[in-house]
Each structure stands twice: as C-alpha cells, then as structure tokens.
Length: 69
Image 1 (spheres, one colour):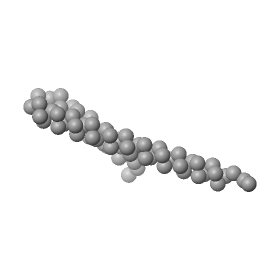
Image 2 (tube, rainbow, N blue to C red):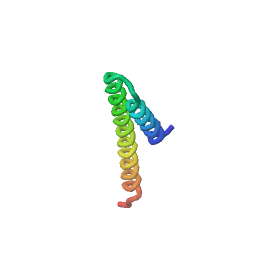
Image 3 (cartoon, rainbow, N blue to C red):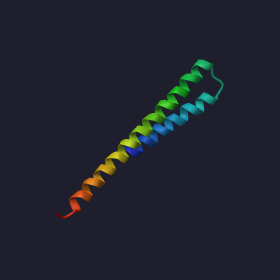
Image 4 (cartoon, rainbow, N blue to C red):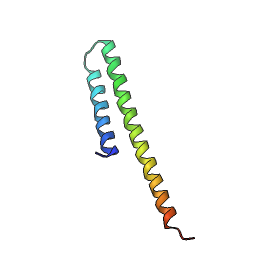
C-alpha cells in the first residue's frame, strides 16, 4: 500500500471521528473524538509530506544522473 493510500485511509478515519463527534455525546467524549480526528489528519499530512519529499529527492537524483559532465 502506498503512502498516498495510507494517507487517504487516515483522512477517512479523521472524517469518521469528526462525524461521530457531531452526534449527541458527552463533552469529554466529543473532545476525545475531535482530538483523534486531528491526530489522524496530522498523520495523513506527515505521510503525504514524506511521499512528496521522497519524490522530490528521486527526481533530483534522476536529473543529476541525466546530466553529462
């Protein structure tokens, strides 16, 4: 599974937590659900940032190896 696929799954978890938090629950549970939603969203962002950094690094390496001296 790619990092982008994992990030998409994490975003689904975040959306689910946020959706459940909108239902009538006690304030402590709502706060916990919203915290979990934020944590899942941060994980997704981190994975996508890592994937972008790796893609950028790979592109730079490819560009560097294509140059002739």
